[in-house]
Image (cartoon, rainbow, N blue to C red):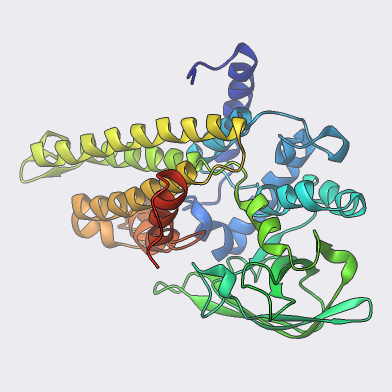
Amino acid sequence: MDFTFTPQQEALRAEFKEFFAEEEKRAPEGWTGGIEALFASDEGWVYHRSVAEKLAERGWLALPWPKEYGGKEHSYMEQLIFSEVKSYHRVPGADLWGPYIVAPSILEYGTEEIKREWLPRIARAEINWCQGWSEPNAGSDLASLTTRAVEDGDDYVINGQKTWTSGAHRADHIFLMARTDPNAPKHRGLTYFLSEMDRPGITVRPLLYMNRAHLYNEVYFDNLRIPKRNIVGPVNVGWYVTMAGINFERSMVGGVAEAKRDLEDLVEFCKQTRRDGQVLAKDPLVRQRLAEFAIEIEAGRQWAYNVSWLQSKNPMISGEPSASKYFITELTVRLANAGVEIMGLYGTLRTGSKWANLQGKFEALCQESLGITIAAGSTETMINLIAWMGLKLPRIR
């Protein structure tokens, strides 16, 4: 692949940088970025929504979509540039699911009626989504889910439970999968639904981190009625509708950009902090660890670019994006732990403490980082996909 951006892409990159650098200045006090900051506080949520409105005005929430649905018909690489710049500056504003999972699924499988009803609303940032996939006994093996959907006239009646539902307490809409044919093979009896969160029959209960931050939730469906017009794709084909969504721009460049920014902050801390009579940055063991992370982050960045380029040729590749997800999420865990260790006891202080360095960023990252090795496919699942889809190794039955 050619790693050089075109003049048009460089101009777009400069436009993104200017915008997100300014929006970063508007962040709430103590803002450290990341998904927890977005959902856990009212201030973070207000900040997110204010940026979302500006992104919608510029059409940046729908960069690769067809123009007829509110998009700009940009390429995968231009979407990558947007994600990288935005994540580096730790600015929210792009709903984590609507533009990047729901919309691609609708574009691939939705009827024209579904497209015209939902896509413009997503592009205008009118809808905040949460993801109704994982269940207590169906996470990485998502096809094992047991939430049932039973046809009843013009509706389907949904009963079951979802768990680890990020941002459900903030969302006004949910996309979910439910089993519509219990007798079919597990991948072939699922259907993809869209629903408002204020429909009767939905209950949301919080699942708190050890530090009491509120990101995750349990969501219960008790005779929830969803109209048939809110089904994306054919009935019993929900698994394939889902795959179309999650294969969209899975380079993980956002995670790489966040890690790069975190490392830069840690390096600056080491330059300014003295321990045992010398600056931390002169400690050879500290320098070696920081250098190793710089190398790994750059390797992750190059891989993310390669994945995006490959997806521009074939959006349905699986092995390479799985490798990127595995590498970056595990790297983030190591970086979080190293940051706390290098900072010493100060690294364990939470955001809000007057003694916390870097506003408690690495303590918070330790809380979050293990979760991202599970969310959107666990490390173990990614390794299997690398073996099966990337290396074409046989499955052991």
